[in-house]
Image 1 (cartoon, one colour):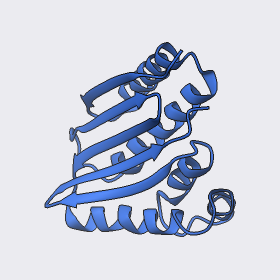
Image 2: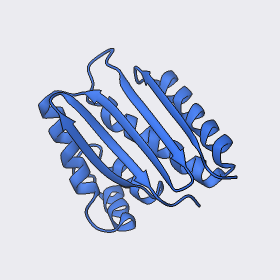
Image 3: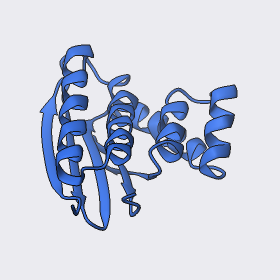
Length: 151
């Protein structure tokens, strides 16, 4: 079965809501790909992206998660409004997590996290087998994970 599917959801991050989104991601990817390993990687990726931003949100602030899956690629984008200082901290964690090869970056972060959020982002690179980037337009901030590997 070729992998395909799209999920877009906006929610206030919290234990209950984030857990429900994790279940939806897992089920969508499993339904669209019949690939448990890919489903697990995408679930970890979505949860870690949301967590990286949720730590810096004000009470009641929402994130929008968009997952797209097709036969050649998987992509997750989590978007929210962040103050400049919070966006800079996420960008710093991303720069540190993107240093080195995925396994080395993850091992380093597990030993000593230099910036809050670094470990989760390094985990996405290693366990999720994804590349990471960020985009900022004014107060709107996006964390993006993508992969071309569908195995």
